Length: 139
Image (tube, rainbow, N blue to C red; front, side):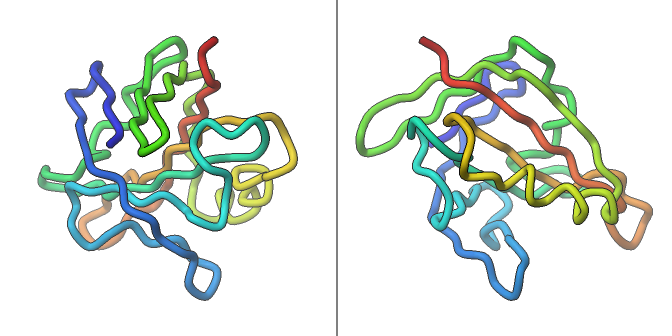
């Protein structure tokens, strides 16, 4: 379960895998997906990546992710316990820029962190951008 009090988010987390180089959130927009090929939440090294849907007319778990700010808290509950994270950055990437930054976003070599990803900038047909939130574990 991922909980973000500031946004009123409480969403179940399910394991997902990348398919053909893409990480697609669960079909149910109220659930979010943890990239099972990345770090486990709370790991000392690597990025625990969670992605969720934004629904342009409401109802997606990560609809308002872009509203997070540095210092906000994200709580992740797992079968091993609860991990609290503090947001350190929120970046909106155009789709092409996100593709160029993917290696850094999904990096598994650095210190443990949480990365939340969703779509943004609905133009009436498609989303033009991705919001990426980076959070560090709290002591």
